[in-house]
Length: 255
Image (cartoon, rainbow, N blue to C red; front, top):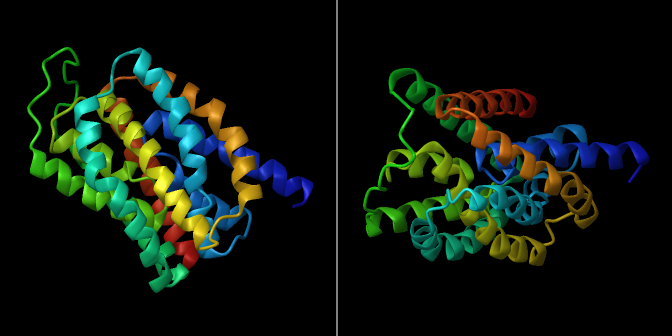
């Protein structure tokens, strides 16, 4: 890699790591388009190289949330029962779908999720009292969300946070910061089988992943610290605007 590519890789890590801690998404959803556009990596490499970066960034971001006791441990475990194996299966399916199609699907998926967040934050009252008792968790719902999030995590190498955060908010009725924290714990765990399978398939550029991780690890912690200080409504707007912006731009760039 050239010196400029090294700097770009670290910068991508700083940005995606910060976003990971701030939005509880692992960073893959934003990292993939940046790697593709700025480093001109092949589609499947752009997708899979973000997977090993998710573990250190999720660990860093989750640390800040754990200190504030924002993680719903029971919900995280229930999601992981199906999410972990489905991540492996999703990674296998990448060999059956063209990289370009996966890029476009990622862009459309980001845009839809972002729009849903803006609509929610505009229509509903978001400022939930974070000290209220947490609602009971439906085991079936948790297993189904784990299946969907895990499969997409492996298929699109996104960590699944863009599925888990809205699901934890809307289906399981958790406050925004609990959703972010719990999502990061799940992302941290599913990144392991996802990384192993994509590595076996030869989809990961390890030099690029290492450089991105250098930037992502410290910045994820600061992203999480900022999230803990922001209002829930503000976090929802940030989540929505960022995902829409990247989704739309990435979609047209691929076309």
